[in-house]
Image 1 (cartoon, rainbow, N blue to C red):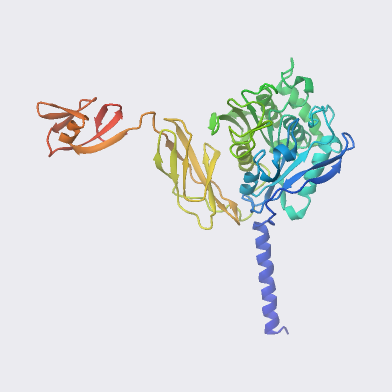
Image 2: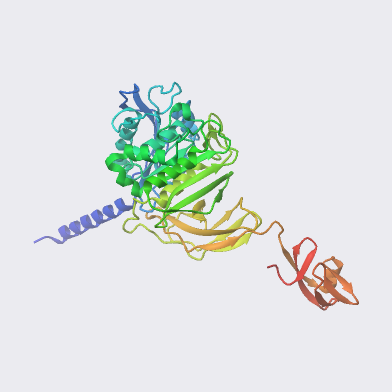
Length: 488
């Protein structure tokens, strides 16, 4: 017969085991929160040398809906390197991925292109016969597998993404085509599509269409083509890019829609702070599957946003693409379910607390255990707040926007979105209302006197006797034009 002490020990052991199991569902091992030293990975027998590069393992917990870590493979462009351009050495600025990795608890991998392809340290995106086991595609798939299969990083294989610039953008699409089973989402920045040559980066060859690229992509996928059904893709380019043909951006997105199959609906074009416009496309199930971003005035560069580099094909003066594309991937991922007990509690009471010509201020009720909140405008994350309020700025006058909010719980991850609400910025003229005596209104030139009766300037509405005993509210709806009553 078991002693009382033995039973207590057994009970304690069960409790500890249960708590550990529960904790493992909600928390991943924290990393150092710094970029690694240069790493050496697989040998490239085609282009020569070993794949080298860096990785970032955040100290933060994942805030994805299922509470698991994502992995982002980031590819530099020609004439760039991972250390000098993507991670920017010790500062970590570069392509400006570090803060986004911290926000989502995602692991980053930034490799250097092996060999010296095209004599400019490029990725071999124009390889007409890429292989999953050799060359650049081979070593990149190998490094992804190293991280996904290593339990210490706790990476969700359903949340592996890739993004790159120029030849890295072309390689991003190549990887998304040849390995749709690996990459749940792709982000192509000024990248030529499959089937083009290095001599065709600046123009679309005659007869080359989105269908041409789609057919090549499906050919490369082979038996993995079924995985396209749960993949998402986006493209971005600068309207002043004269290095890679701007037409390749929308063409690549259209190619993916052709590959994904079915009918698509083009969504409303939305502004992105920094001079970008995004056009989303939803499938017949109402899921956003592709997006196209044109960045006004940006040349051939990675759009890093404030805090990134601003030299050598990196632009810190326009949109923050890592923030946008990570939000796009996480929010629209079709492979990673929310997981048991992971949805968290959505905020309630979302309301407008103020508007101006270019901004909308929101407020909502606090959620227990939440350490922050994500604010979504027209379905795209507009920003993050540590409090229960947020001011969305840089908006267009007289425009209506739809907002939702999610709560970020360190254990449960990001919650479902709150109920949506709409808000409208003020027109170019901001109406003001003044309550005063009729006499004061006349003295302030908001009204005028006719035979002892006060009349509102502009509308000429009667206000009653012009004296100190009659009080009226006048709203100035345009310069010098007053109506009786409050602002509309």
